Amino acid sequence: MADAIFENPRLAAIYDPLDPDRSDLDCYAAIAAELGARSVLDVGCGTGTFALLLAGRGIEVTGVDPAKASLDVARAKPGSERVRWIHGHATDVPPLAADLATITGNAAQAIVDPADWRATLAAVHAALRPGGHLVFETRDPAAKAWLGWTRERTYQAVDLPGVGRVEQWHDLLDVSGPMVTFRSTCVFASDGEVVTSHSTLRFREREEVEADLAAGGYVLREVRDAPDRPGKEFVFLAGRP
Image (cartoon, rainbow, N blue to C red; front, side, top):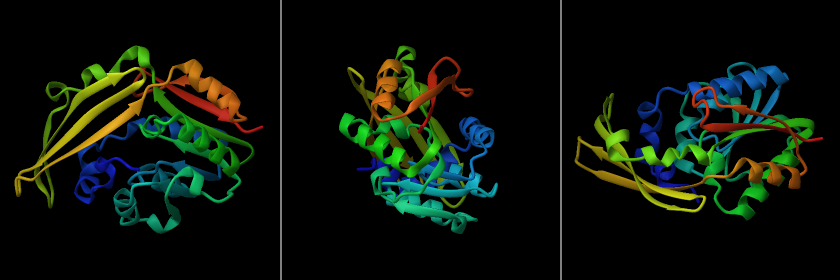
């Protein structure tokens, strides 16, 4: 199931305005260009920012996401007709013979159950053509990013056109092994509504990810640093033989 922060229509509508800097996607766009990808499967496409960026460059894109509210936002954006949108998970994607599959942002870490993660890797493998690639990121647990998930460090108040003033912050709730749970809070000044959502992310060690890829039939091509969070994330580039 999708987290409420992506599934609640009111929260999905302000997701992009509250986080307008998507320079984290630059490395993925660069990899797509580097590989000469003409068809891309964007797993966990959310509100469609990356899918539409690629489609605008003439790439055939399929975007899949379990959160209907986020997909509704994506479908309402200019150029959305150039993307094939699928409401569901990677396991719901039909055979594509895609050149590249991407899992950007927190999407890979949001798949917390090991069986679901293995199923996702298998489904993506099936959707790729032989010689195709998968690229995704995951935070390095050693960096302990969750220590910064406090109200003091994450609070922001933004005036959004057509919405009004919105306050948002995150609170760390629990760290149990590789599982980290936090609460997101949004306060809408226009009517005083307070909307909270809970999210859990799985912080995988590099060795765990490498083992999962090998078990899934992938060949690991490279592990890169994330340009937007140097020293804090791994960017895995794997191929389907």
